Amino acid sequence: MAVDPDCRFLYAALGGPSGGNLPGAVGGPAVSSFRLGAGGELQPLGTHALADGSQFISTDHTGRYLFSSHFSRWDGEPGGGVALHRINADGVVDHTVCRHRTAFGAHSIWAEPSTNAAVFSPATGPAAGEELSNGIFQFQFDARAGTLLSHPSQPRVAGHEGQGPRHLCWGTAPAAPPMAYSSDEQGCSVTAYTFDAAGGTLAAVQTVSTVEDSATTPHEGWSCSQIRIHPRGSCLFAPTRGHDTIASFRIDSATGLLSASGRVAAPVSPRGVNIAPDGRFLYTAGYQTASLVCYAIDEEAGGALEKVHEYTLDDWKSSSWVLPIDLPGPEG
Image (cartoon, rainbow, N blue to C red; front, side):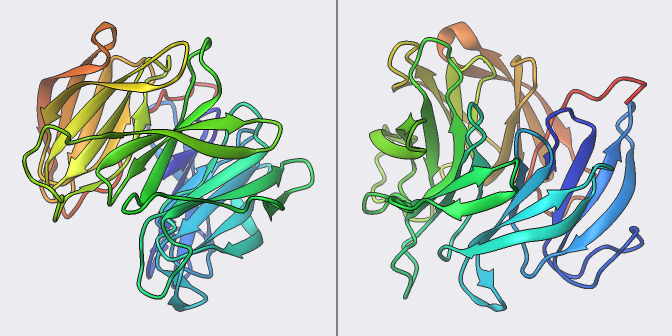
């Protein structure tokens, strides 16, 4: 799921037979558009067919384009890639502008927030027969022209052996240099990158473990999932499935580098994790448990977490995403 920058519209990727009774419903992979009401109600606006199922979507910072990543299928065959889609004046995804094949394991796609001109898509790995997995693909994006192009000189940043970058977040501390951070699925780690705004590229500078005090190595059956940064850029959080914990890291306000600040137990297989817009609470849902857990964030302690409440999810099947948002006002 994703929301536009003004929290007026919500978008949901539908991986298989989809649409149901939604306007413009289609019979395969798609993305559906909704208007967000002041009370959280969703008004269906339309459904746009995709060539392949998408596991992740995000908007650019104008709210006029939607990015999608495609993890395991590309043109109906094993593979992965990314696509750019237009959002019309009514907030509806209505046209696929372009598609780029990257690699099997294309887990996510993100526009760098300060420029809106650089876009990155991590691919986990390694994957059998796929040399380009385990890296971050780099693109140049032009919101005015509506183009997404592979970076001409550095289309991919290779991950180190066993890393598997999965999701990204962006440093927001005002005194720190421009930074990005990846959760590393196979590495059970977080990697920090400097961002070259002029060149639109990333360079890895630090990797820290999310399970460094564990006696079990290698981390068979463990994998990092998503990653989230505090709204003020002071700390970040990365859950590890199998180990079933969430690690907290303090971000140095001058260098942007990380230091471990704590770890808490999480529901079984914590996959979706997110932070309330005001930065006070973190939420996670266990992929294999019918629960949503809320933690209080101690920002001064480097993001140390304390469990506040656990909610039971009715009619639960599996939880992949958590999305706390500030709802629009009555005038929408």
